[in-house]
Amino acid sequence: MANRIKLLKNTFTALISPMDSDGDLDKQKYHAFIRSQIEAGCGLVPCGTTGESATLSHQEHESVVRWCVDEAHQSTKKPFVLAGAGSNSTREAISLSVHVESLGADGILSVTPYYNKPTQKGLFEHYSAIAKAVQIPIVIYNVPGRTGCNILPETVSKLANKHENIIGYKAASGNLEQIRQVIEQTPDNFIVMSGDDGKTYDIMKMGGRGVISVASNIIPKQMVEFTQLMEAQKWDKAFEIHQKLLSIFNVLFIESNPGPVKFAADLMGIMDKTLRLPLVPPEETSQNSIRKVLRDLELIR
Image (cartoon, rainbow, N blue to C red; front, side, top):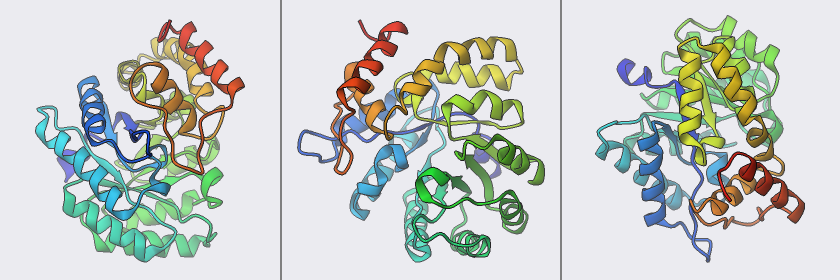
């Protein structure tokens, strides 16, 4: 496990899920898309928010993770597969986590329970129960804007010190001071990754290890270069790239993710923009903003 954990750094892609015109998962396009991500040097995160996990059935969740694991295992690069397996029900989160482990994923990305608004004690018990049920690494995913739940640095620290397979934290709160506290209060080998492309530079400069990225769905090579520069402590060059890509980081969240990135992927010929309800394509004004940014960066004509 320790050798694989070393791969949890730099750029991981929160993979969008290709769907056909009927809204069904497109297996062929998904395999091709994963191969392109692996070739660019990205780690893989299937069934996260960006993959529309909230709209997938358990059977579809299993299929997506299996397809991703199969491509990773066939590749000579052997990328780390960090599969989404969270739920607001601890029993369901455990069931998904056990299943993801059985499919061969390297680790689990486990979002804080949404809607329930558990206390910090409830969060501690939730993640402790998952940690006891599986052997593979667990990365806590904190995204209060979506879940209505914020896991505090002290709770993350308690979990990291209590369970050896709770090894990381995806930081998507937007609160840099809280993220700094997580880095300071957890063991040196605990892995903090940005969950927000636009804050990756700041988080890595504080000691973060990389990003679980939305932007890398459409600019994987640029994101890999960006994070590798920071790993090499080449902060001036990395900041130049940060400034250059900031417009795309921002426009991909002009509306709810993954609507904008799927629309951008469609414009770039990567995959169709089809989303599952209740998600819909971006409004026309947002579409125009996305087009302009892509043209300015010479990603489309």
